[in-house]
Amino acid sequence: MRQFRPLDLGVVKAHIERHAGTHEIFMDLVAAIIGRGSQEYSLIEKAAVSIVEDFRDIRRHTGEEYVIHQRSVAVIGIMYSNIRDHRKIIADLLHDTPEDVSAVSPAQSIINIREAYGRKVAHIVEGMTKPVLPQQGEMDKSSFDEVCGQIIFKHVREFGRDCMMAKCRDRLHNMMTLWGNSEKKLRKIRETLQFVLPIAIHVDYLWQELSVATAEQISRLHIDDTK
Image (tube, rainbow, N blue to C red; front, side, top):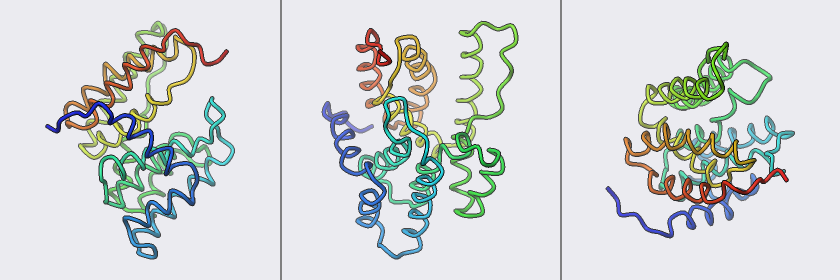
């Protein structure tokens, strides 16, 4: 198990600020680790262009372009976790596409990803995509959230180590940029503590960073970002 360095979270933030802001800057990072013009580079560029197009009109609640999130997840993998497998980088870029792009169904989107980028990418993305969830029915909100969380993160675990690690990268960026009122933040914090941290500990990956990011958000629970 690697030794935790207290400045790690600051390092993550610095990498994101430097490399995730625009498509061009992100692709310069990719070119530094994977030869520009190679087949692997071209596939990453194809995925990076596709998310710019698919999420062009979508912004986060903060007003930031949503596509910065996908690039940030990939940057955490490349710069912080030293990922060099182009398939994992592509999966990081595409992890929200089936769930959040309404042009095609999630199932068809995963098929399209498999045809364009291969089975491994599609497998990771499918594991990152929420499965079909039950109707709330007569359950109260808290019980319904608990049931959904169990289903979602059981699904992530079933898709294996690469998927679990991708989910950790995704959630780390989520927790570093958590926004909203106290109730919304508390739901995400509880979900992280109950479901994501056990996954991170299981694969011994980013659990220290997730712990620090979550603690920072707990300290900000009193702040309502919507006002």
